[in-house]
Amino acid sequence: MNILETLENLWNGSGFQSFFVGEGWKNLVMIAISCVLLYLGIRKKFEPLLLVGIAFGCLLVNLSYFGPESTDALYHPELWSAFLDEESEFYHSYGHVLSHGGLLDILYIGVKAGVYPSLIFMGVGAMTDFGPLIANPKSLLLGAAAQMGVFLAFFGAVCLGFTGNQAASIGIIGGADGPTAIFLTTRLAPELLGPIAIAAYSYMALIPMIQPPLMKLLTTKKEREVKMEQNRNVTKTEKIIFPIIVAMFVILLLPSTAPLVGCLMLGNLWRECGVTERLSDTVQNALMNIVTVFLGISVGATTAASSFLNIKTLMIIALGLTAFAFSTVGGLLVGKLMYLLTGGKVNPLIGSAGVSAVPMAARVSQMEGQKANPSNFLLMHAMGPNVAGVIGSAIAAGFLLAVFGK
Amino acid sequence: MNINFTLLAAQTADSGTKMEIGDAAITALFGYGVVFAGLVMLMIVLYITGAVFKSKDAKVKAQEKAVLENVKKEVEANPLTVTPLALPCAPGSAGHVKLHGVPDKEAAMIMAIVADKMQTPLNELRFISIKEVK
Image (cartoon, rainbow over all chains, first blue to last red):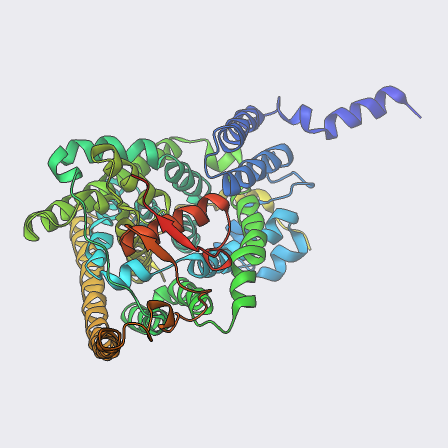
């Protein structure tokens, strides 16, 4: 046995050596980025349930993938390029991915097929009380207004040279709804999934920092002090009928929303119907946790250095922030309009909760309202626009999918 | 099976095609309009269903009011035979709470706050009386 030759072979086969070959340094940068994301998730508690998984997925892929020659990689971008290439013999071949892919390629099938985002929506539906929205249907206007950032960021992305599909995927970051962003991006621009998912979840975590300055800028102290009347009581029957009506109405309007809206409303029906507590409990807890594990790690895997480290990622991060800011502005402006039209009965701060991000955005409305008037309780009023935003972002995604999807 | 991974990697391309800025502006405006239209229509549907349930609720409340008025009349007529404690309890209730100088709404808030602080569901607690300390 030639020890030197063996050592040389070991070195040549190791990942350490790969850092110093070609563009291997990019992997080092990505490893540093994944450590920063881990820090933000663990220490700063930025959406930790997903961000920790995404960051670790990012770490794993950049430790094992150094280009198409990497035989032991956990994720192979080139397999997915072939999957999407209509001229490839492996076009839309999950069998090819299963037989040649690594662990994260196999887990990623759930993202690509739209399974994980839909199941997450099912859990969100099972955890959400739509009562405040049913009691005050006007909240839907705020949920609609807060999609302004989606379309402004879409327009901005086209101006910056992105394709229509990419711009649509970037715009949906403004919906402040991670599963919807992932769902749409995997269908329209899968090559951007990593940066879009990271931007979406990071900004959702940053809502308490992004929204308050805009809320203060766009509202007067008098408006922020408004105390709203208590909502009417919603009957159990109304809560049972609501998911059925919404599913029928929205899916008939935009069939492309069926996976998201269908799962959201099924989860909610399980919660409200009163005879499926076991299922509701499973969807809210066990299933949600399992899917979160798979979703986080497989989305993180799409951040291979070769596809992540480029100017487009920076542009996506900037456009994502713009989208979030304008969605907040849209909600606040319509909130102010409602304040004027109702003679001061609506506190415009609830408008900013129209950017789904349940329940973080509603909490921010509550906190800002209470800062202006300590006896103000806006939380339940803000939950209406907040859950309306979930439906609104799903409709926005459905529209973009209908326009740009094949 | 031999796969030319290098060739496949080179095929990674942007999804979709470039758009004209004018088309993008129209798409953005139209999309925003569709979201509004969809949610406005949903709002109308919710108002209609809400109106149906409100009218049902009003009927039930009118019936309850009539029952309470009957009880009130009976109490006035026979003050010793019917006491507030004889009134029917709400479903799942453990009994009546004696309120001393505390309005119903404030009592409900106090009970909710106590349950929250004790991390115990409200239906597992029993409140005997609530008295305002002046």
